Length: 210
Image 1: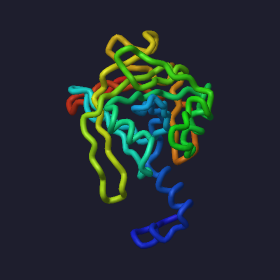
Image 2 (image 1 turned 60 degrees about the vertical axis):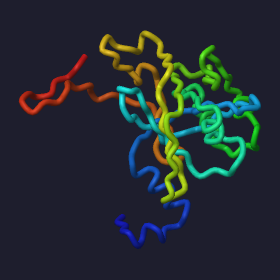
Image 3 (image 1 turned 120 degrees about the horizontal axis):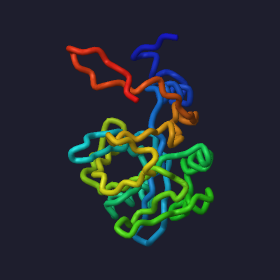
Image 4 (image 1 turned 45 degrees about the vertical axis):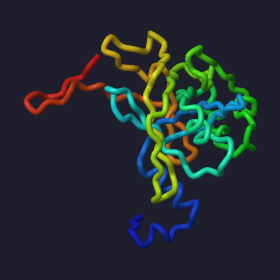
């Protein structure tokens, strides 16, 4: 199969969406929890989370075009806080269901049977079933006119990870944590590590880390 700049736009819409979405390989799978100013809770499936830097601790998400009203982007814009929750095999089907287009104000927590969990200093809901979860405060929101998506940059302000999955050097063992990843629009995966390698330098070979 070979496509170019003229044949890609001509592909059937759903085929093109599956092809381009899976082309980039495996992606992070997370549930983003937000809360409307009225108190209504929202939970959305995202596969666009990416690392921006550790000092300061920043991450980004891409929000697809949405209609005005109660949704993840609106809640982030208004409330300035949101939670990011890893998905485990025990509830990946419920996480997938959170991508459905529920009515404004309808809670995905209630619709899927997942449970909100609150920390005193964070007003957005975490997912109780998630074992790795963190919260962000909005730093910058950048509209992307090219395809009407939105880049949200957040500062990480709170982290919860079970001690047994965090190494002495701060490395989180996502395989032990059983974190689920995804590819394309609807394919979910667990992982198998090949190796963890030493910091690469031009004057020494890489070695396996424990």
